[in-house]
Each structure stands twice: as structure tokens, then as C-alpha cells.
Length: 329
Ligand SMILES: [Zn+2]
Image (cartoon, rainbow, N blue to C red; front, side, top):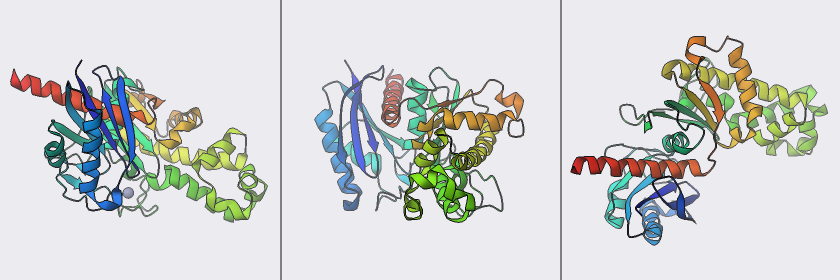
């Protein structure tokens, strides 16, 4: 039976899987990313693992990578900040040379959206957008089963939708970007600041759980969610505020795309209903929701976990195979 190879390239690990046309993972392996040795070493390791997992009927290879590879040439338009020396690297051309298979690459956020729309929370949905809540906020848009790439694949930077033009300064240079308020990192930072400065903090469950003053630095979004779940009013207020900001960002994006499905992914979305119920509550007050656009849209949590990116890469490889067959015919 024919299959494809899918690669999830991260700053820490490289995962490679062989995947059939229905999305079943037939074999997979993970190795550390030799990021410090440069892109040549990274590509050589991907090719080596891909050769090992390749079968006689393997048809193509799809790669999900941080940063933004050009969707035509595969050269990085935006270099991944966790992979040094990658700017301008001939990513797909070099991999193609080493593995002698058709190779396609895309941004990992786009492919997480594609994976979820293929087999996860966005299955059978017409227009899917995903917000990935992690260190920052990433995103992806899938329209009729295809990633929407914009003009140069520089699309779906949902974390940089500004919700306050005079707000917090963001790494991108703008102010008030939603990721400076509603990413997992932002929630952790805000919690630490509140624990240090808010007099009410000292009697909170969150303060007790982190071990008091000495443990404030280790407080993160996960701890805030846990304390909220256990009824701590202090943590609850922090999460409520974070989700209100997130609702602002989501609402702005929904007004642009009119999606049928909005997926929340990334580590913070593992809190599930704790997040979606709060975001929905903010949206339902109608102050943040343009009702005609939201009428048929749903807000759901990602289902594929760590496999979303690799399944998205496999789906992209299968789409490439289909396109090649059509061209040959
Ligand atoms: Zn920004």
C-alpha cells in the first residue's frame, strides 16, 4: 500500500512518521534536533531518519517547520528563531536532493490546523481556524481542506492581532498584541506579577501552592488553571481576565474569516472547558461577538495533541501526490 513520510521539525526534537492515506501512523521515530550544529546537520538527520522509515511504496515527504518557508520554493522567508543559520536556507531543495522523493514544507501552525481539520476537532468543517496557545499565540486557516497561505505564506499570525493600540509592547514591534495578554507565557507572567504586588495574593491557594514568596518565579499558566479548577478566587480572576482578552482576539479574527469552527490548541488549551467556557461567556455577552457571523460557528478544543502537526504534514504530502497525479494525467 502506498504511504507518505511526515516530519515535525521542532527546536528540541525531530519526529518522522510514515502515514497511510487514511491518516494511520504506520511507523514513527523521534530524535533530538542538532540545532546548534546548523541547518545542514538538521537536514541530514531528517533525511537519515526518513530513509530508515521509508517503504518501497513511499510517495512523498511533507515537513512542518517553525518559521515560514515560501510555499512555492521552500526557502525560509522568516527564519525559525530556534534554528540558527536557517535564514534563506534552501530547505526543500536540499532535503529533496538527499532523499530523492518529492518534498513539500509548510509552517507548523498551518499544518496543525490542517491535521485538526483532516482528522481532529475540525473534521468535516468547511472553514477552520486554529489559535495555538503556547509561548506565543500561533494560528492557521484551512479553507475547504486546504491551508490558506495568503500572498507569501505570511498569514495567520493571530498572536499579533492588536486588542489595544496603546497596550503592551510586543516582540513584533507593535503594541497590544493579543499574545502579550493571552498566551500561556503572558498568563504566567501576569500571575507572578499579581502574586508579588497584590495584597490579596498572600491568602490565595496559588500563593500557598507555589511555596510562598520563594516559589513565585515558577508559577505558570498550568498552575493558574489548576488553582482555578480547585476554586481559588485569585487564580480565577487572573484566568477570567486572560480569557476575556483571548475572546477579543478570537472575535476579531472570526469577523474576518467567518469560520464554521474555531479550534483552541497548544498546551494551554489542554485546560479544555476551563478556557472555552470563559471565552464563550465573554463572547455571549454580545459585546465581543458579532452575532450574525458567530451564529453557526463553534469553539472547540484541539483533539490530536502532539500528532496534529505530523498528520497535517502527511495530509499536505498526500495533497501534493494528488496534484502531481493530476498534472501527469
Ligand atoms: Zn506582536
